[in-house]
Length: 502
Image (cartoon, rainbow, N blue to C red):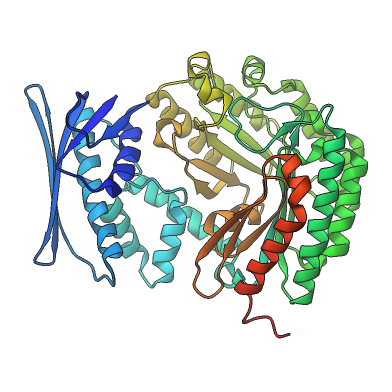
C-alpha cells in the first residue's frame, strides 16, 4: 500500500505520518513524491496564525471525498522545536481522522505511537493536572479513546498503590542482568539470544565478564551509598546456564551489591520450561529468590512447534507444579495473542488451561512483527489472525483476567503490533512486578549488565534519559566488558555527582 502525501515537504513529518499509515495498512509506504502513482493520495496542509494552528486533510476516493479540519490554540513554547511538536500533533490529528473516515477503522490509541502511554499520564498528574483534565488532554491532544484512558488510569492507580514512593526512587537504581542464551531461538524473538548447545566456551567467557561487571558496579554503588530497588535476570533464558553457574552468579550478586536485604524484588526469568530442574530451583531457594517466569505463550502444541519452542505443553504444566511445590510463591506466565494459526478458539483454550494453574501474574502480549525476527523475514510462512479477531482475543483476555481477580498494572506498546493494540501485565493484587513498573515508567536509572543488556540512565534532577548498550554478540562482549563497565561508571559519576560527597 503506497500513500502519497501532497502539500507537505518538511521531511520531519514523514516518519510520524508513516507510523500512522502503518496503523491502517500492512506493508505500507508513505512518501511526499507526487510524481509516482500511489494507492491513496492525501492532501494535507497547515498554518500557524493569530495564535492558532489550523490543519486539514482530504482524500478523494472515486466519487467519495473524505475531509477533516481542526483549529487548535498555540500553547506557550520556548523554542521552534516545541512549536513544531504542536504542528506535528495537529497534522497527525487530521491525518489519522481522515484515514479513519476513509477506512472505517477506528484507532483506539488515536495517533499515539509511543511505547509508554502510562508515562504520559503520570507526567500530567505530576504536573498538577486533575484526573479529569489529564483525561481530556489525552482525548483532545492524541484522540485516545475513553476505554484506553480508563485502562491507563487503572494502571497508574495500581502502580501508586503498589509503590507509593514511585516518584521518590530516582536516587536508587534497578539492575537488569542479561543472560544471552536459550535452548533454541523462537521465531518471533529479536532479543540477543543464542542457542546454548555447543557454546560452553563462550558461556564460560561471558560469565567471567558478567561477574566482573557485577563486582565493579556493586563496588561503585557501595562506595556512593546508592541502594538497589529491584534486580531482574532476563535474556535469553537465565536458567539456560547450569545450576552451579547460577549458584556462583547469585553468590557474586549477594557479595557485591549493597544492602541486598533491602532489595524489594529479585526476578529470574525461567521462561523456557525445558530449562527448569529441581537443582536450579534449589539454587533459587538458597538465595531467597521466589519470583520467576514460566512462559507457556500458548497451550497449543502445534503452535509451539511452529514458533520454535522445543518443549511440550505438558512440560510447561509439569514444571509449573514442580516450581510451586518447591516454594516458588510468585510465578509469572506470558501468553501471546495472534500466534501463527491461532484464532479466538485457540486463545480461549489457552486461557482455560491458565485457569487450572492461576499464576500470581500474567502478561498478555500481542504479537509484534519485529524487523529482525524470523517471523517477519518469512511472513508468508506464518499466517496470523486479522485485526477483528485479534481485538476479540484481547477483549477475551480483559474479561478473563477481571473475572479471575487479576488487575492490570503495566502496559506498553510496540511498532508493528497486531491490531494496533498493547501488551498488558496483570497480577493478583499485591503480586505486581516492581521491576516491570520501573522499566515502563522510567522514574529511575536501570543499569544493564551482561551481553546485550541495555542501560537507561535517568538524571535524578532533570529526568533526561541517556541510553547505553552492551554488545549483543557474546564474542564482542567477552572482548570489551571492561571498557563497557568503565563507560557506565563514567555516566553514573556524572548523574549522581551531587549525591557523591567524596
